[in-house]
Length: 165
Image (cartoon, rainbow, N blue to C red; front, side, top):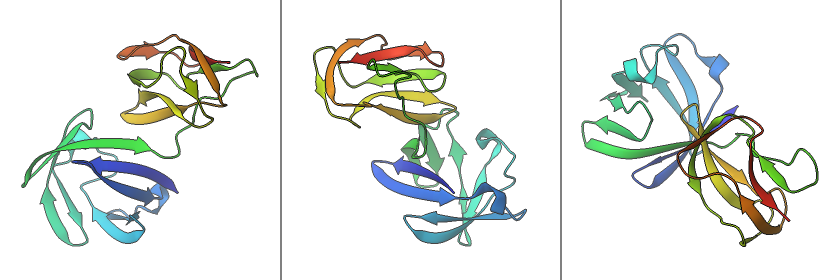
């Protein structure tokens, strides 16, 4: 089961789905724990090629931004954010406190700076990969001794992004 956090105009929605259960015309998913049926043209089409969806029998004309930053519907343009709740988080390859990129992507936010004290699990930065935002969290408590990345910087897998001592 995959889990996403979809935020539309500041309102969060937790979406759970299992891709193999696509029956050719619809997919069953859970929206904030409630079962929902969504029909769309095809699961293999790009979001950019989808111009309608049907949610529990109610049709919607819809346009997606290619970066999933907004969604346009009959009611207007709505700010959107999508985050994979099951995305990997950076863990040091060794116990030396280095936080490495778990996947290649684009740094969209840096939430800490050198000298900050952090607790284990605290978000350090946001890494966007395949149109999904991944919070990279501190693997342990300590003091940030260095931040080697900045916003709008691309990183390769295993790039050292920050160090915690």
